[in-house]
Amino acid sequence: MIRYAKGFYMSLGMFCAIPLPFHIWDEKLTAIMVASFPLVGLVIGLLWWLVTAAVIFLNLPLLLTAAILAFAPFIIAGFIHLDGYMDTSDALLSYRDLEGRLRILKDPNVGAFAVIMTVILLTLQFTAMHSVAEYSRYLGLIPAITVVSRCCSAFSIFALRHHRESNYTPLLAQNIGASHKLFIVFVACGAIIFSALYAGVSGIITVAAVVLGYSLAMRKAFKGFNGVSGDLLGYALVIGEVCGLITLAIINGR
Image 1 (cartoon, rainbow, N blue to C red):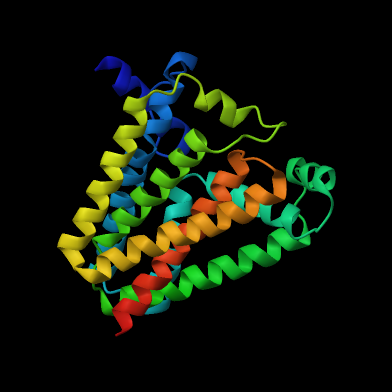
Image 2: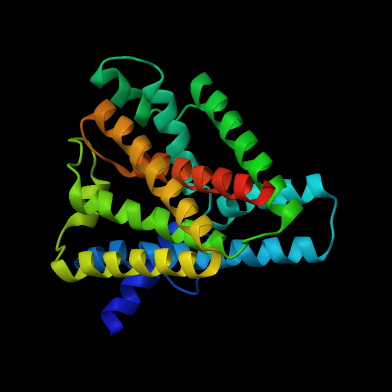
């Protein structure tokens, strides 16, 4: 039990901006760390939901509410996934050869394509959260979105080939066993069942949109780099979540 708690703590410390009292790192626990992705997603989703409930309760101006809610998940996660989204977008849209894309992916400078795609992403996220805040229906699906997106990330690490210059994903994928994969399946099924019980068909459609958006984004990124890396995981996760939010906004508006 202590090993699992340490693995979750490691995952929380790396993928969430919540201040923690001390730092833990043990390479033998990286598989547990990856299996804990959905639990980190649950923490982030619950905090996002609490922020949503608070700003709606305070009856802040709708545009301000939408702006706060659009940026909340990035702030809570420490912008780590948004960084991967920007780097991957910049490299993919360069339409260079593989070596050129990898060079751009590692470049610390921000390119024009990264800025353009981030503006598009934030515009979509802002407008989606505007609708969610305006109608205030099915807010409980917010944690389900963040849990399912991170289940997809864990499966990507477990199942996909890592590109040759990635040191990050091979490290996380070591010592993976059937129990880790079964745990991700269990949590994913739990999130889907919760969504169905909470919002019926609307809940299932919302989490399905997350999975579809993530899968399409990862497919494009994987083909573009001939393997998966940490930046690509962030890219697909951000796109998957915004697809879920857009779907939730459409459902709210009906």
